Image (cartoon, rainbow, N blue to C red; front, side, top):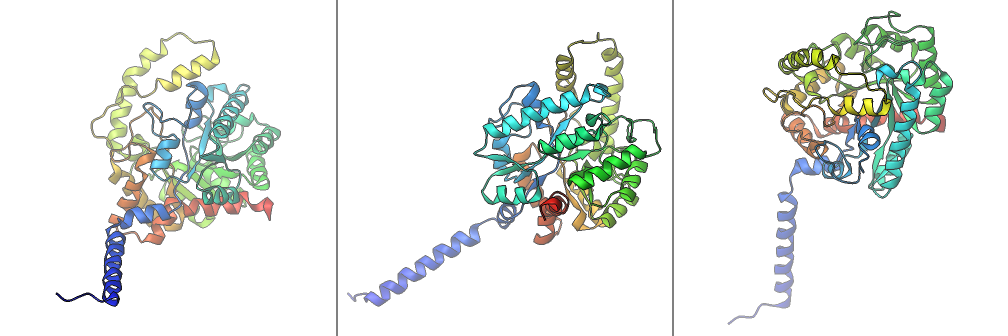
Length: 398
């Protein structure tokens, strides 16, 4: 029997190691690798409501929900913007109170889970936090009525950690018109322009989701900084009033801003939107007969958490419907101006294929399947929003 020389043993071991490494490397899913390498950013979520009114810990896997720390970690989401949604009927003199309550609740929740998440005030904060392997959580006010027409309140919210604000929600208030209400000012009035200028000065990101078309164009004429649609769809795909026209997408691109494509099912699909409207029409007369609840906190809790329990489950939009909106926004505005703004919360169903934040890898996979390059996928998944945040919120650091 011939002996194997020591040199031959070394050669054989080397060959085995090479094949083992090659098998491990080539066995990896390239889309999983791409998702891990991407900065994944969701620009809108109502998690603060669960923290304040349900008294839930975001460090736990929450019941019947879409977003919490375990789901964000599973979906490898790096940045979760949390909206402080202010009920419209609290305007004009009770909106700030709710904003402060939500802000305090959310900052407390972040501090309690500091091993996993950190409050991010600036783009530089986001880069630092993500580099440590944590989730960055910028805070945003949803509804400019929260400042109750007072620039000093705007400054206070910014001082306490709010880095972005949606100029309106579903009411036209004392300085800006909403897409869901009758116009009062034909866009922005003088106070509205002062708000925009002050947000520019402070380094706050201006969010134009929910505003009327005319308000959007007035903001573009006034602002010195890029703006965002944190959670909107494309009107050409679904003519919902909350979605964005092609003209607006083109102007947004010229401004350097970004649209976060929303996952909310009625914004994605015209067929589903019609079904939801029929359901609301049936329930509205019954709801209007319910006695007014005087306890404001209890009223808000019941009205908000009871939404959507009987939504139709037929013809639910899918991941492909979401990708269709992304495709259209990229076609009109360009790939440098498109991101993600889910608006997921346990009120309405989520699109099939996106049960929650843990399913974000499905979006990366869907974009890759549709032929997007790795560079472009990384832009859509988060780099575009990071560019805007750094340009706007880091200005006072320079």
